[in-house]
Image (cartoon, rainbow, N blue to C red):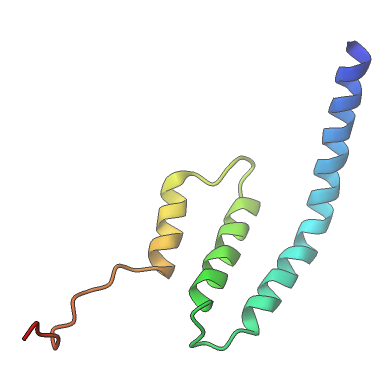
Length: 89
């Protein structure tokens, strides 16, 4: 059992080191892909939110907390305000 725990611990450390080394490159590719979208694309808010959430995750040693998720999503997907010109008649 001790050998199994040591092997698992070593594998986790190797995966973590690999991810930390590769993260800047793959995050850069994500940002580059998001920048190719036309500004008026319906996908733009999704790409912007994902890019910001990935960066927020990279900036923490744990998980992005719920209130941070809400801040980011609220910024990219604000509530729709009523249109003062719209009438039901």
